[in-house]
Image (cartoon, rainbow, N blue to C red; front, side, top):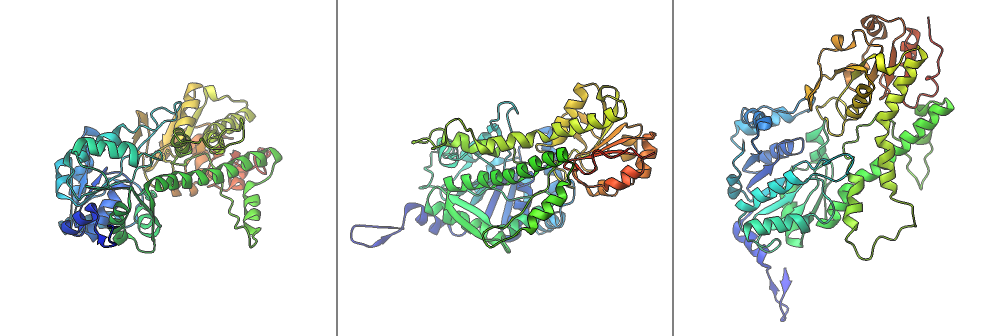
Length: 482
């Protein structure tokens, strides 16, 4: 609201448009992926109707067909998701389509389109698909609608690029004719429904009216979570900063693990000790190290780009560079460390990577769901194959990846392997039996490299394996059992 010169309350143009339009009843969700699908199902459970909107290339047509049959196209374990999709389809409250003109029917539309790297060497996000999605929305945008970006974006994008595209395509003014906000997605693969409902939700509009309308959209889907309202720029920074702080925790664990290996110390004992050292001023929480798998690998670079046009420039010590970028580079090194451990294990047996058959277990980025974004397995695989190793790959959830053959048959994958490398902590790998694995390899002393601390080192060492694990300096130099 605004006040005129006499002190009378005068309703803003956008708020008056909302009053005439009424509450949010129909929603559109652009992007049927790990964020879009659970969000669409939850919105459909709370509002009158939801259109799921998916571009229709051959590679994603199956999503539309499966969702309209009441089935989830997402692989892996997602408690409650399949049942919720079936429920809202049966009730006639959800439908998936590639027809973006359906946006004209809705009161609010969210955009959950991935922004991956263009090139890992360039370290810039590819926003081409996001831009096209915004153009599609802009062509069908109507006065009084709400548009919310959920994608991870560089700070300033909502008020800048997004607002510009929507205005150019629709002729409508953001913040005056329609609401525009950023509400970064909170979906976590493996527990998508739970995290969206139970985690607090950041909601930031380009003005107060946009924020209020976005709160109206997200509040009904929360159970224990609460809304944290702010400006869209602050919301964009909050999203990437949260991932950056987690990156710092991860790099602290990974760097500590490398030190512990050199000093022949068990990093997990150290972590337990750190977590026990609590005091009033500090809550200590040491994360565990690993081969990789942090899905937000690009987020450390967003503030760098976002602050470039700022005046005055950020005040930093000279020649230090970004702490967050340094952390990301160390974390990006962990698949290479897995390679080094593999080569070390083979060397103890007089073998070389070049002539070895290696079984790679786990192509997923995280445990149990089918989520391959920024998978550490790709870097590890490329290093091995470049050296001439023959690599077989197993993952219970992933069928293929950019032409890389991935099997669901663990027995075939392990046959004849000189080394077995675990890169994902799938529950199936936690149940691996050393005697059975050794029999499948056909070797007296196979190598096993544990990148996720999912197996018992002593059980494999006693069976004759050469064991190496990230941070397991207490075990990596063991005598080879006969």
